[in-house]
Image 1 (cartoon, rainbow, N blue to C red):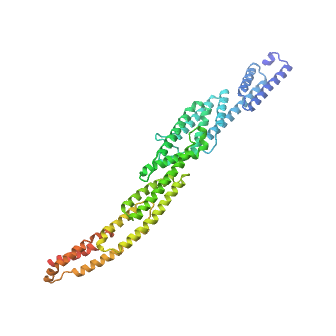
Image 2: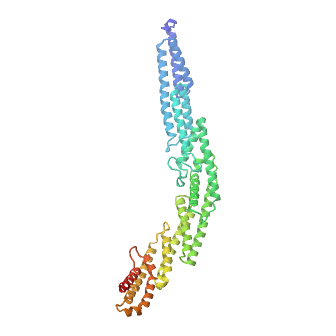
Length: 450
């Protein structure tokens, strides 16, 4: 052997074995240190490789093989560890810190030291893809609406969830550990800052009134929900140096502002109803206000911190549901006492009130329908009585002289009956009382003339 050809004595071999064992022990110690001294391990392994190439000595071969085993085992364990951290760094339900990402970066460097470049590049590509995916998940639309993979672009999906905040935190961690990806975090953060600033400004400048269109209210609620969602995640978002300290005050002021307007509007609406009873113009205004309330309740119903506004909405609805049916019942009761000649305009007005109330979402005027039907039943009986009486008194005589003498009176009665034909419009389709009686008398006279 080379050792023998070099003239190594038994004592020299023994001393060489001791040195080789010491090198291997140092490599094990380097592997176990925190952090592992992989450069020293690599140098020791290269030394053993060199010695083995020069001295075909069994102890050197064993040491080299064991050193190679230690390195391969370290590489395999590093791959598993990196894969686990990448999965943790992308999962919604796992915590992941800057330190975790830094550890992944260090471990990849260890793979590079041991020339496991293929594995290292594989994992670096996976990290890049993960960071890009996070950036897309947290990207903002041109309208400053936060988009998540769990929600489409719409007013109702606009929010910063706890999951979104954690994803942003993980994106920050990855980008700090891998500066080549910093642009993705910077882009998201810039967009988020812009969205918060512009949304807060819109909320602060919004002039709320009951004359606003429901679409405007929906946008306001969307902005409020977005800011509220940011505030709910404030502990997780403070690390990103976002200007969100004043968001709570903005939301509180808007809640108070909306509540004050609603209280004033409720008072005005109730005063209008008491002054004008169920005037259709008043009800049209109230119906328009209820559309605004519906939009508010839909948009703010699930939001924390808007108890005052929501309480005012409920109070408005309760008072309206109390006074309108009461006044409507009074109108129907009064109408039952009116003469038939006075009822046409009044009945159309009452029907108009019922139609307006029936068209108000969330308002179920069942008692009002019952009262209106009761009124129709009373008028229907009076119309039946009128028609029957007219038919009986206007039946043409077979005596031509009687017909000539009484014809003028019958004609006047026929005109009077036709003047009440409007009532048939309030009956179900296919049913008529006045028109039927009119046509019957008219037909009798036509038969007589023949």
